[in-house]
Amino acid sequence: MATQRILTPEALRSAAKQSQGCLVVPVTLRRAIKRYLREQEEPHMKRKVLRLSESFSEIKDVNLMLTATTSKELVEDPFKSMERSKRWKIRSCYGDVGLKYTDDETVAYVASRMPAVFSACYRILSEVKRRLPGFSPTKVLDFGAGTGSAFWAMRQVWPKSVEKVNLVEPSPSMQRAGRSLIQDLKDLPLIHGYNSIQALSKTISKSEREHDLVIASYVLGEIPSLKDRITIVRQLWDLTGDVLVLVEPGTPHGSNIISQMRSHILWMEKRKHRKSKAQNNEACKELVSIKSGAFVVAPCAHDGYCPLEKSGKYCHFAQRLQRTSSQRAYKRSKGEPLRGFEDEKFSFVAFRRGQRPRASWPLDGMKFETLKEQRAERKLEDLEIDYEDVDEQDEAGVVPYEEMDPLDYDSDAIETDGVDNNDGDEKEEQDETGHADLGGGWGRIIFSPVRRGRQVSLDVCRSVNRDSSEGSFERIVVTRSKNPALHHQAKRSLWGDLWPF
Image 1 (cartoon, one colour):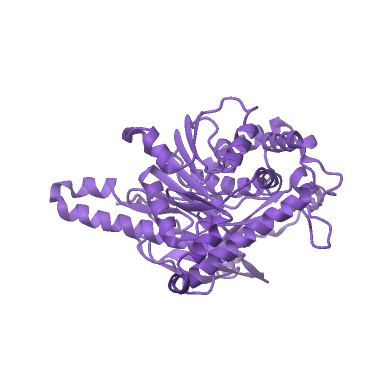
Image 2 (image 1 turned 90 degrees about the horizontal axis):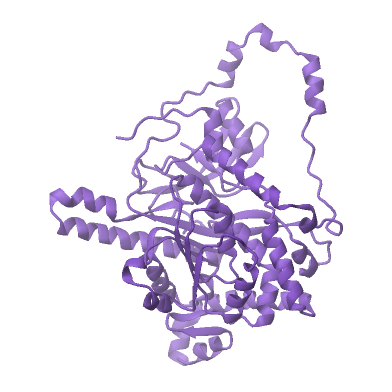
């Protein structure tokens, strides 16, 4: 039986906060990118960045076309799609994987895409750390590592615990760029690179194949075949000892891939769990239930059918980041001045082995007063206004956000290494103030809240029962008159935050 834990409104707000503000890419990564680009001395960089963007669009279009016309092409010409994909795909022993990055495309990727991919990975891994406070991975596998965006994010989130990292990346130019970017870092874990999962499995023994954390970011979408995707994800799950994180772009296609992989892993583990229970006697059932199974750490509050699948909407989130000097130098805008920030949209899912822990829901046992009741309890002295305090508050008011001129702003020159360390200390203090458990009582705000007058509308994906076996997508309206405390929290909630039930 889960112990009852009564939360204060302040603890509720702290636990629900999962979104990040405008993220500043760490100074060490910005300097590494700047040094790498300076060493390459590549001319016509803007043109190469544009070509890389067009290549990503081509991959997305071809993948969608293959999904829609696979059966028709197999009947008309079985070799047609194979010949077309050879122009831009790497043929490996685990399927056609990824864009065949040339040196030019790798340099363009580092200049334009790496900071944004880092920001998405950092946002996701930070939430995994908050939702699993006792989780500190020592052995990590990064599949489709690219230039190391996920590795840099992992170093920021768990700077001391990671001891060994296995990187799987089939592109030689990406491997070289990743090694170049980390060459000045200190206290690096033991790093091994492989060009396929098969090469990794052949090199290490069976006892060493399990990793505390396995992450595959922005790679499954480059695999056109659903069968190949499922095969790879099953291999990654077999290599996972504790937590598996899958990340894709925040597009309908990327969200659909995440939804498919989520459904497959949960279905596979439920089937294994049922078979294990049937084969073992009553005395071993408790042990089986603890060791087998899987549940979703984030973003879902439940392990049931995704309620968004047939709604015409798709599950994705956004992380804002300040553009680095390389992004501002090489990216183009459509006839307007380039903004000093960009929003990276992403879809993700994080699994953990075992059974979802049972816990009381956050609002169990809590009593909220209506606005009328609060006003009835006020005393006369509470209504008196101290004008000196009002003047002091006005003087120390919040300064509105002013965006720096992108031509004059150079984050590499302004920021220092000490800033990153201080930020980390502040985040550790925030983590201690509030913690959202995994019991299913925390829903997820899927889209931006709508604020109208004294009411806030939230689109929330939530669990509908205590065992988190089923979920629903609901619109919740919070008014100030009925619940001032939750209304105060709703006004400050953002897309991607949690909502208590």
